[in-house]
Length: 351
View 1 (cartoon, one colour):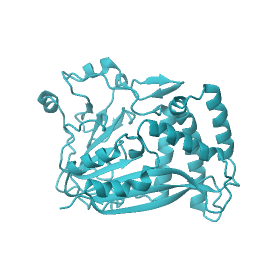
View 2 (spheres, one colour):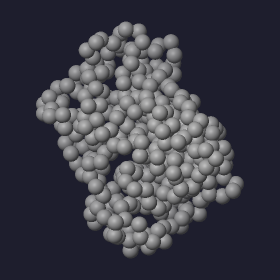
View 3 (cartoon, helix red, strand yellow):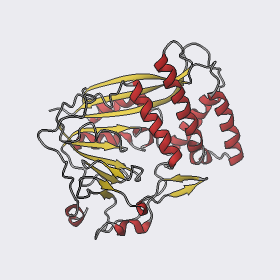
View 4 (tube, helix red, strand yellow):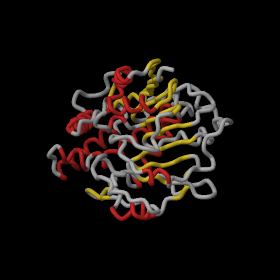
């Protein structure tokens, strides 16, 4: 990476200080190839509408930045960002689904956004997938990385948003002295998760923590109400097959602990949450409400997942839509009591 690109980076006036403390108690427990959104004078950052350009496929907006965008970033020169690294849309429908999923997980975890015991004064945090860590520690310097700018027009001043493919070589401003690296809904869509965890280990300071939060995309049922041939099960199986062709694993949450150990992490632990699909847990008001949300999250995901991945399996548009109609009908069958497991893995770099 060229030094000129680094030197033109603007820092927020709200970057880390020794008195940093959490906003609440949830935190217990020429080849330049990125865009950095830097701070406005008042400590907030804005994104111009020209940045938010994308490619469309099958009627849905996919991740992309247009060639001319990079020349707008002061004097720096950036190359066109690569299409197709992430197979799902990032349009308003998908953003709404992600927001609903975030709200649902917040309910399930009783407001805890992460579980790693990073203490009260982390100075530097790397947030993969542009999650929700920044406002928990408003005094920390947060670098948030995503494939395209789907954040609000105004974002907290302690965040530097980096538009980059984290699967490539990690460059400045991704340094090697982070206190905490957080990733939600990230590993299942990365072709080489082991490499990412190795990089995370190398970019943490001694004693630093990592936390990954992902669904294990396997449909489960404990009471025998799920038929042997169930369209929702088939949906996830087909999607797993499509993702495996891209060297991704939607079920990686079940073995993330093993990968963390292989990367060198110690104190590896996991918390799991069973998330019902549908309001069948009538004896638990929270679970019933969460079940409704989860069913909506899954329903909204059908159109997103059925565009590119299922086409890669050789299915025609007519076949895809017919199959998805069966899946939607099955999702609304309250007599079938299914759930998915949400896994929160933490690991520490030895001091």
